[in-house]
Length: 408
Image 1 (cartoon, rainbow, N blue to C red):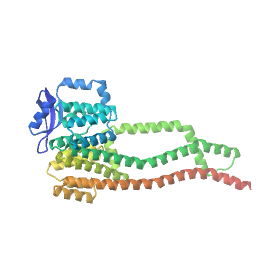
Image 2 (cartoon, one colour):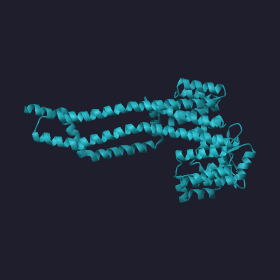
Image 3 (cartoon, rainbow, N blue to C red):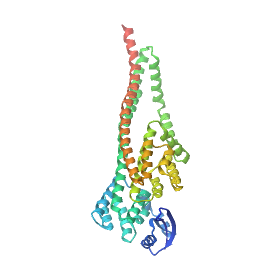
Image 4 (cartoon, one colour):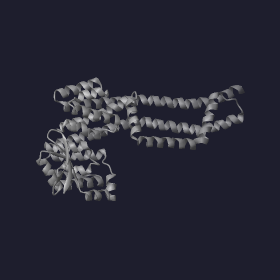
């Protein structure tokens, strides 16, 4: 059989080629015998490709996702079992048995079966690239090559936990403003659709003169009451247009660039993404993944187009003999203190420690910044709510006071 492979050379470069072997395990052994670390090993035969792509069950399986909780549980269990001295296959079997979701049990069972057939764990993970990104697989491959799989799973667990903490931090910061915005929308809608029309009937019956603000309020209320289907359709068209535009590469690149250039939110978003990238670098470098491969594989941890282009520039600079610190300094996305720490670590051969320190410092600073922005957003939204409700109340009660004064 023919197998297409991608593997790491001892100097850190990546080689792709095709080799002949009786089975996948034999192909992996042949690569390791040549001093290569297998990263990817696929059956090059067309029949296998057709069988994998034509199955409805396989399509449904590929549409599933590993949650952060699944990843944390799996990596924590593997770290504990491997550190206790358990062999790899029994460790995978124990993690498979203890998985809470049936989908995860099936996934781990498939990986375990490949390892039982003689494949390395990194090669066994390759067909499941839909669930395990290149960062995960490269770290596992390096861990197998250096006999440090327990430590690798520990760092993978830390990565998953930090990603979950960041997601919870941002979600928690947005929750209260979202609730206030929803309450403001509901209150204003009730006033405009139900309360204001009743006052309009009252004032029309009494034929009393109305201030300009009251007339404006009545016009807004009537416009929304009779034109809400058109407004709803316009919002739907706008949302659909944004979704369709985001599918194009040009619109997505423009939006990504716009987000990172916003005054406060953009700087915070940039620092959150940078912290994620540096934490991935720290974890991979500590697992002895070569620097160029670390930079290349860290693309899987980023979705923002601006930072993807930054990683491409850093990779090109480092490939040409440049320094990571200088490449990040030229991009302008990091503070001088961060650049100084990275340069110092790089010059002293301690880039892994430097990226680990900087990412931890950024995580702490980003947490404080997110909490500060959330605290500022709360009174701002309350003030906006007060202005809206106050305008409506003033517009309704001022004519009533005028009528009461005229009656006396």
